[in-house]
Length: 204
Image (tube, rainbow, N blue to C red; front, side, top):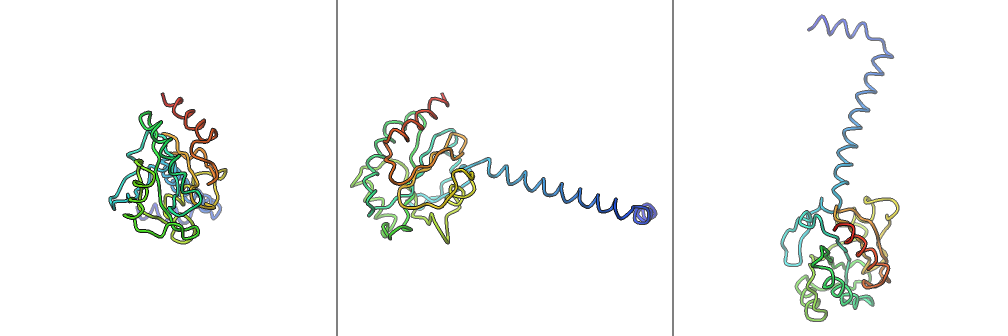
């Protein structure tokens, strides 16, 4: 083995050595890129979050379902959209659709309460029965990994920071972000409903 190694070191030309090194680097890069692609291919199902009761929830539980992920707030001009979100959830929940609410205090300090206070507000004021999660940071420093994925990693055409409370992210059954709606888009608006119904029809 020692003789073979000496022969290799003395006989391989600098050009060939360089080519071999570049080939190894390219292979390593390819493996790394493949691993990253595989991770991104899992979409939102890659993430684990905390529900409003403090329990860890793996989003893999929603594989095969259409999701509408919304960053919410209790003291916002758009807060009445809880009513629309509940209405859409009630209409389609038995067909494979879920609304996931993520309270955030990032915009205007409009979600100052505790998780328990938020839960009580949603249930008593708007009769919310769709899943609500613990208050998170959805923009800027400390951004939750799920929202980093939704705003930066899910695809360039839908990338960009969240502007305000009640932005909506529509997720297909494979966990991929396929549409994004600004705060002003009401949950029961034709543009959102048509997208939801189209996805539901495609999965039948």
